[in-house]
Image (cartoon, rainbow, N blue to C red):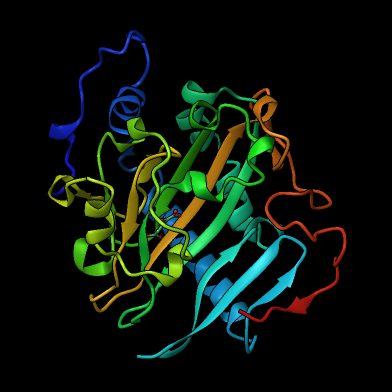
Length: 293
Ligand SMILES: O=C(O)CCC(=O)C(=O)O
């Protein structure tokens, strides 16, 4: 099944003036807002992805400097690839601008307010022909650690993704299980999500029906929003073109002890010295270094 506006739920959750994506998000656990960014803006974003990829490919293996992290992997089909890169906002002004764009704030503020921190600032590539560029079925709540740093995470956090390219089933678009945000945290196993293929038996194992899953078809400039408990994953890119996705995760600043301050009463906050987000050794090992994985 492919997600389309006709499957969007109508308003009816008691907040009649909220934009449609807010109702859809609350009822389905995800939403798509079409055409948020114009083609020229997406061309600049695509160029920024190319710059970061060129930088990442200079490294023989995964590389970290503070929160900035290049995940380099060897793909059995096409060789060394940059699978993802974290916190490009520190090193690229275009990527920094997108994460604090007022349109991103307008999308998430009706859900979590306008005093926000960022927990995720991450770029994903799926190069054509890569065999390992998959994400097994998961809920993002599993990554929100330490758990005690997050208060009411389901209501306080929104994940967003900006499509740089066309996302279709053949290019490795995300698959989503609508309404799964209502199931709480599921025992899906401990293996690393990005080392697992998108395997529908993972859903059956926890009593869910893979036939209910939808493909998140996006065009360049569309923005997807996802709930922390929504089940999702994505398969390999079998198309001839790249599939790039710019992911930014925002949290109500008062509800989280981690994260980079991003909006203060709706005003963008520039990045300064890195603060603790996910990498626990930030203050122990601040120097640039390679990472064995
Ligand atoms: O880029 C993708 O398709 C996977 C994204 C994802 O699963 C995530 O960010 O949690």
